[in-house]
Length: 452
Image 1: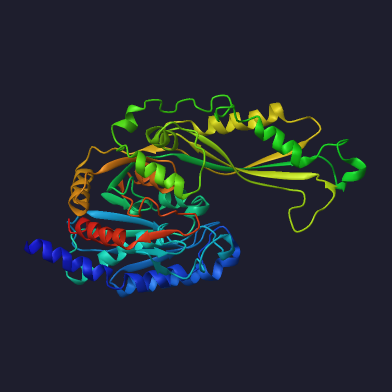
Image 2: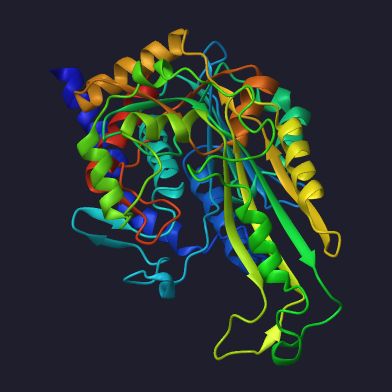
């Protein structure tokens, strides 16, 4: 009982200033996709630096090519203690009130038992739970690990410069274990993530003429770049929504038992999320198939199309240029280079000879499956079960975290990915949120984890 009240004391200390600090953290418009937010990004970096220094950490900033500043911090308990490396990111997805937010997305709101704002789930709110727990344990002299922290500012844009940095600074970052909290619970149960899909972003640009022309004089007699782009993209998808590109599913994991043996089936929870999003049709039969598709199979998503006139009013033209932004996810174990080669081959073979085109690939990372057979995994699993008083479930994640590959392959440390955000947090979307309940349980988990 004494240990319970001692832990409760740590948790209360960790969450005491959580809302205040989270509101300050969220206020920084750290959108890494646009250079116009560079001042907010630098201000946020300085804020985090001071926060860490004030709480006993040694801090160093790194500037790396084509990236926002990296924050490295460390706190040493004893020479003999194990070292735990914490990762997080301060950059966020774009957000505007006009997107459908009830309030300014960068002003923290508390409503219906939720913190609402851009970054509260991905990743500022989750990172802050770890930081405040560490601060409290340091203050009470209860921390049992040596701590290293790496916080980046380009996770939302592919972490382009990070893998090279990690290879070059492997000695600095060396750790026994690493921990990441950058996702959402499965069915609102305590969750450990066992794998991530790989990721690539590319732009397909086409040109059908040197200039736009009058649609009344030339319509239906010359090619429209927008129409040609739509035609060639539509050929990619079969009637049952499969991707008709050679080798696209090659080496993907075809064993449904991986999902059935890990994810708890909760059709009601799955249907509620779909309903909340206003989705009227899915291309899977049930929630297990949904988890299987997003966790282990590749996907090809057209994330944006640009071309012609799309402002107010109308322009009576035949567009001469168009482009599509495409996101590809790779299942764990797939050959990224081979699939990207086949994607380019697909467009090369099907592109009309009267169209000029160009493909620009900006990022590419492989999927990965994590090894759960280790002491740190078992300890973390036990803490989660005790914290939530629920059975722990395991999840193969549809998203990508390039840092995971680098930590495992280049640092050789044992990595655990433990999400703390609620299942309906809607990260990347309008109304991104973190429930107060999840913040409390997250603080409890973090405080227990770092006691060792």
